[in-house]
Length: 378
Image (tube, rainbow, N blue to C red):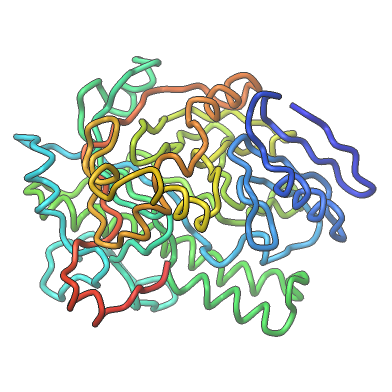
């Protein structure tokens, strides 16, 4: 852990000296620390540079800055138990629905939507989005804390759906309305921003439930309640201050699924982070390469077929070849190192791993289909 003095706020990076942390990302932490009202920036071991603000950080301030949360307000990861009789990844991959399209009106998955849709925002509801979003069928691998796992109803070999998605266009609309008038400045009316923000957080959680229900029905299973659902792009009012999280999950006594890559396990952890860590834990492996670098290097190193079947034997459903390269496992840091850093700093205890069987990124499409629909938004 390294402490960096700042003229205004403290910056703490929760990573070991051997962990790969880009200097640009640390520099962004210091830029944030210099903002009016900023008190503390806690950088997680998955820290990497973002657009204007670091990803993998929890930032505590007396002033609310919407740009520190970003456009995908409410993005998070949920874990749902699922029961299937026979698990043949090739057959199951072919049965995943098209999660780029809004479900039909008669889709039984709509049964999980109770009450009003937050902000009345129906556009994109039930779709996964692009970028690093995914829906994954996984198996519980190593169980480190059997007692904790059993409290969650988990055992080695059990199947789960892992859903990583956010508020789609809603969060983007909220941030754009702010930045068009105030740029990267603070929210002039924090209460008004928080009301919109809270809708987007609820929307993201509802979207993850709907996505899980769509996949469960398609695979012949019943939808279930999430055992874990933590958002990692949000602002929390805590002790009269604003705790902004951008790519950092609430880690104060909560269970969190920290995503690995398509070709590695993810880790379900029990978070117990204190104020020095912004009450937060990492949200994933964290990018090691920019998308452009991953695309350039990946094309020289991998074939499309290699990226569709991963080192752990799982399958990746992804009709967008560019996205396959951008999201290749080699574009990310080692998840084992991220987890080791959290453990070394007393921020989290690993409970179990989830090992991918099928990871859905975007539908497999024919050329005509793809040109008609375009790339879509993340």
